[in-house]
Length: 438
Image (tube, rainbow, N blue to C red; front, side, top):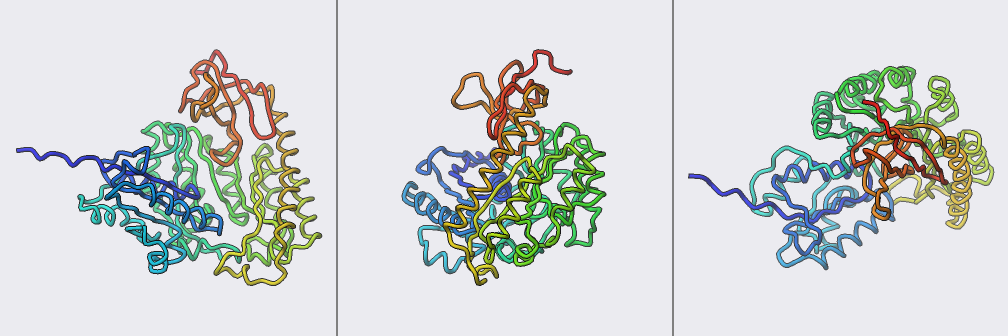
């Protein structure tokens, strides 16, 4: 006698915030078993929102999303909110303020999310798996959770807890599974990749050793590192980039500022001479791509401090750059510091840096025109028939510019060689070569 299988669970899903949240959402969905993702919340048996609570605008977006979906859901639909919002504020306070949510899931319960939801729905037990939501070209690999640094402006340690590294064997196994599914690029993510395994007796060799193992996996063409703290960029790491063909010389180093006084006020682990680490990288890898983020308007930032930062950006010529205005986040040391900077001043400083970086980016990309580059194709362009969205090696998905590409053998998931024929402030245009290497 055979037993009929349970119908697929209809889920409407929203994952807000960073790629780390996306990975958590993908693993949660995979562990639910048979799932059907719905286009609208009215069709769903479960609405799942993985919230972000890093800064105040993200908190407001999370609350707004919860309220909107609560209004749109169908009769009998369970509304579940997980992640950083309950991690930051606690379930008790949120439950009283947002009674529309049927089930709250904290970050500390991440391994049990699927079991808790299935039990609430009266369904079976969770299984293992991951439902990848990125295009076929790339996937994220989260190597650790939490953070052991204590930057004065950051809420992450209080939300996601202390550093917890995933064992290398698990990461290699997960990466192999992604490669078998056709993934060409693995984007390694963590709050600080260079801190990998320091919570479990590892040292500065642990992360380079992991990279070497991942670089041996057949089918992975690109390995990309996101979020490297300056002090963790060692000679051994740079040598590993040289030795592992798949490992891109792409360094995303969130410096946050250039002036020593501001960096000390931020409590940054690398508070002196940020230029030194950039010079070390360029000495070892002259063609390396350098990406960073800065915070302007930190408490006590003077005109002199900002000018120091402006001159630093002009001199360093970053490949990519993000600029954020300081938010005095509740519960952080920085929120209570004196000499808070006016909002109008913050916005003006941000605009000045971004205008400078726009000129730097335009000049850099103009220099790529006429070159032949490998382009990893992500998706069909939704507006122009025959055109696809792709990226060259120094373009990270979702945060950097892209390469618009057309021509033979261009399809999502393909890696093609192309002539770069045009550039703009942040993007490239390429034409795939008629003859591709075997």
